[in-house]
Image (cartoon, rainbow, N blue to C red; front, side, top):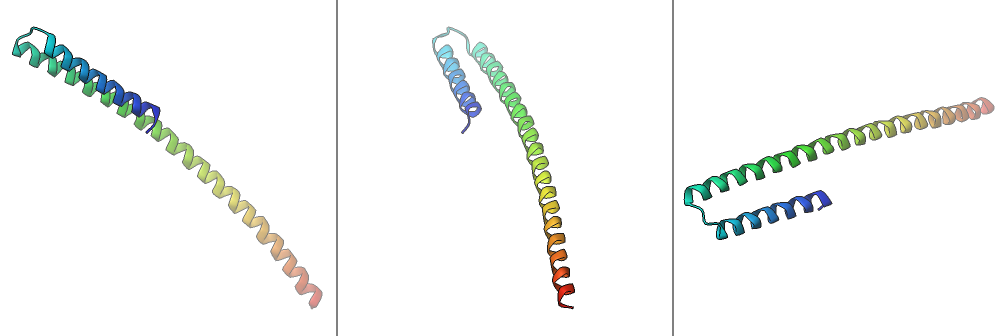
Length: 100
């Protein structure tokens, strides 16, 4: 679990605790309490969606960087393999020509 996830879980826990304490000690009617709960739930949902969107964006960027690195490494390996194949081919031809 990374720091962002821990922070989000802690924030949600603190928010829920605050709401519960507020509801227990506030002298409000049931209608007012339900409206407050609805508003807080909407705020929490918006916050969670924002964090989700941010995390998704960060993961997309990371995936793109990984893909670029992978493609670069594949191209490097192809180049080195081509060089080795040419060297081996040249040495085999040299051996064949010397034995002919």
